[in-house]
Length: 462
Image (cartoon, rainbow, N blue to C red; front, side, top):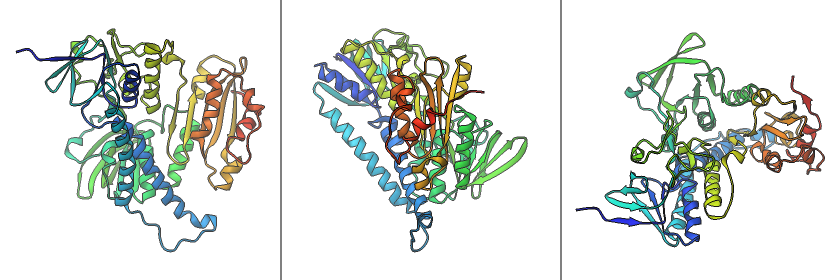
């Protein structure tokens, strides 16, 4: 007996940052849509990513500032104590509110069916969800990614955590070993150090956050080390084994053999797309060697009628790039737009404290571009707002094309750097000259008021 097939105008697989908003857009157009989710509505960001981790960052900052109270002439009675159970409960409440609101929104969409189950393709226009067949001429894949776990000798013999597992902890690790010195690893490293854990970061490469320029990497390392995080770069030949205190990690660190003993082990070395169990072989949709779905400049895959949005396409891997994917697809398919992935400017943040805001080209990329590049750099120690708050780590760095006067990129590491950088980003999108900002009057005392100053002191890259 053949299975019954339900036909829709569109099918959305996954409910990360792109899927629900795209479904809402199509619902507004009167389309009948199936939205399929096998696990947590909201995907990584809402459940095990941005929202819960930034809630932890906020709690950790309060603990850090409480310990520094005397620096500001404020006296607290007794030592600062962190109640991890309450920290965890606060994080879960904030994350749960976001997930609950998103679930209610989807459930209330007109002509939209929310199906719970695992979707697998049976043909380019047909998927199966727990025995039910669905067909549509348009299918949108928004299945996200998960933590990547590398092959480390002995890893299968010890308990270890990924970024998702870290968010289940409601007790404080005595000593957290973090394998991976990039964005996710560093955020957890600083958070748990501020909560009171010993923390050691093991990075295979020669420096932290290798995608960024060396001066940014060095400053970030200085910030976390000043708070007591131990950092070991050039950590190779890592192996782990059980230990009475938890786990022992052995590595060759710049040629020296080291053994680090910790109570908890976090593996934070990147992410891998959730594309291996979708039945894509039934469609002809092509993936690269790492499993990322190949898409064109408008997010369509190698098979007409199938699009891939968000982390699974490898074209951004951030919440904001995923949401922008939905905006591009919605505009082009339904609103007569001509938007492209290639039109957007790279931007992302590192949410240690103080944060890093990064946009456009790095200094290395600007040098490699062959352009005549000017650079302005200003230390946060010369920023009034930073001095007032006694948070003077970091700097502002802006890169400019000397011929066109366009801003090529920037890094702002310091107080409010993740917010301030958008003033530059918007001018970049407008393709305006840097003089729009350098000649503007900004409010004092703020961090943003130093953007004109930085741009008024441009010098050629050496």
